Image (cartoon, rainbow, N blue to C red; front, side, top):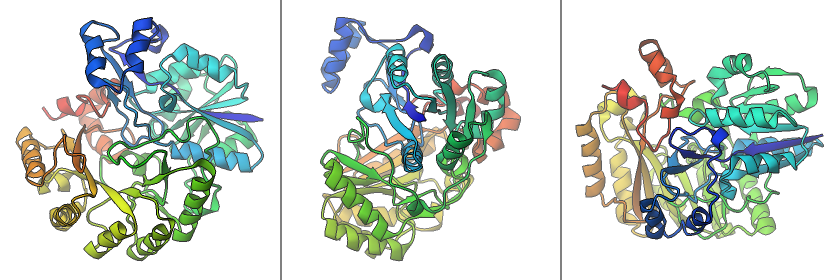
Length: 453
């Protein structure tokens, strides 16, 4: 039996549906896409009306799905999909992954044909809230030649409704679907599968990487040599941020910490087999456990290729951050959201319990060549424009700017994703407004802009 895991295209032209298939198909549009790395030339095509208004996005593997007005070249590795495929392969199933986002495939119709040509028995589609209209359309199309499983975070709160309204979908896998994908493949029983959260990642085979786009994944805020290995040192996060999507909808608050020796063994295996030249630890929170991370640093120093991570400023003492740099860490990403203490308390961030700004200043002043990238948010509950502007001023004073590759930041729009505490806190009062899933794109004005009015 063959199980195919897919991440369909994410491209939009305004409110056009996938049925219209916004294929950038004319010779001029294809030329525009070929030149998308040259942003000035790319936008000249916009001024001529060629492909104007197109937005290109991410889905599988993204904790905060978004779109940009240019092809982003920043696909995240789809870890849950990869672990599920790796597990099914070990258990004797024929598996493959097709990632249209990584492959920069912009035609829905062509993607359906590619999937059809795989001759899979079951096609698993990872969905997300802002792309659910695309995902459901894709499920309907694929169901004409294969059984369809819809999987991922959006189903945590919406599986029953989707099952009722879309009979073409045979299986619905809520949240993290590593173990439930195996149960589905074995039983083939139609219906909803609850998530069986993995708490021992080291007990699983390595994520599946034997497919075309496995060396394309890249985090541009951490511009290390390509190909960049995106790997988990852990899964999940013990903190309770009310907005945070995956720890609540995928992992149900559970955390799996890997042993440093096993992480190092996987890295060596991947470097040897696939030729990776740098590492990104794309954990929910990398730096969990001081002694564990210290041991991992010892391993990474021996591996001796540049590495980067996504973590928190309040989880490690300064000496451990220093040891990370000494062991080859060339970049760190931190989620701050806002410097306003009252707003941080409202979203239950937890970081406000320490002087995290002091830690950020220590790293910035001690290591001028260390890539530091902080993620900020706008339109958080109770966050005013004055608070947001104050955040921007603090970042500027610390040397962060859009032009400084070593001190960069991003501002995402807050979205109360279904299944999160923030959604539950708002749904009674703003329920109808929250059902417009087209307004959950983290790089555009989201539903929170109106909620806060």
